[in-house]
Image (tube, rainbow, N blue to C red; front, side, top):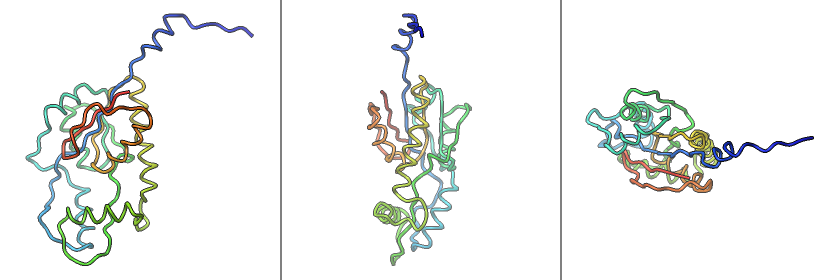
Length: 203
């Protein structure tokens, strides 16, 4: 059996192969009423409506995110409307790839007494979910596995030299961070976790 070395120019191209960046953004402010006070059953209905809602008509994307979108080769969004609407507002008419792997982690509210704001219910629901309550839906462990699959989707493009932008959700974006760190991606820009925020990663 004979072996042949790759030409030096081929090796040089491999060594200098470009790795793209990954930008993970949170959606803009959804068009929902947060002033209501509801019980745990009402919160289920409120959250279902939230998942169907686009962004508030007054929302505008920040210039920084627009520039990052312009520099992106691939733009992803979850299949929830608030993420799709966000991606559409920054994509400038370019193609958006939607994938359910990026949807928000679930928020089943615990059956506790009292009327609360949606924000307060969100805190109770997330705490209960983190402690293991999922009511037959996606568990924390399942969502962590999904976060690994989501990161694999993003890194597959970035490792080919593509700059990637994802428009997704607050909590699930957090769940992807430790996966990215374990794989050697560095967070080089941190713009927080509020609406329209983003974080940028390089390898």
